[in-house]
Image 1 (tube, rainbow, N blue to C red):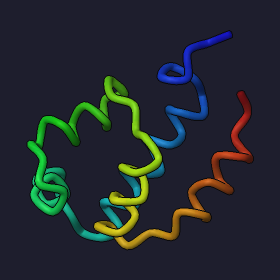
Image 2 (image 1 turned 180 degrees about the vertical axis):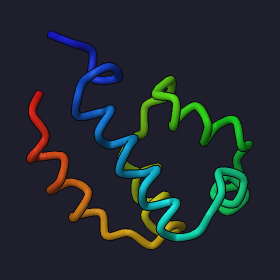
Image 3 (image 1 turned 30 degrees about the vertical axis):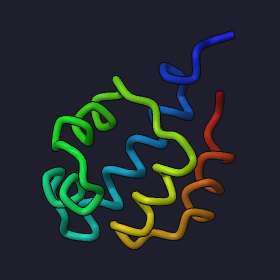
Length: 80
């Protein structure tokens, strides 16, 4: 079984999070500041070096203004 950090679904999740951040007109630094984290934390998510847990996913949704269910539905459509 492939580790989820390197799976197609995780790569797609990262792509969707980046898209939503850009749609919101936010930089990595903006998101990091809103989450009270370092910009490197957000960069590590973008590069796929860091896994996003459920709580962090919901925090990212709140900061960037995306609907969590829409992202999850898009992930369900992604091949393994």
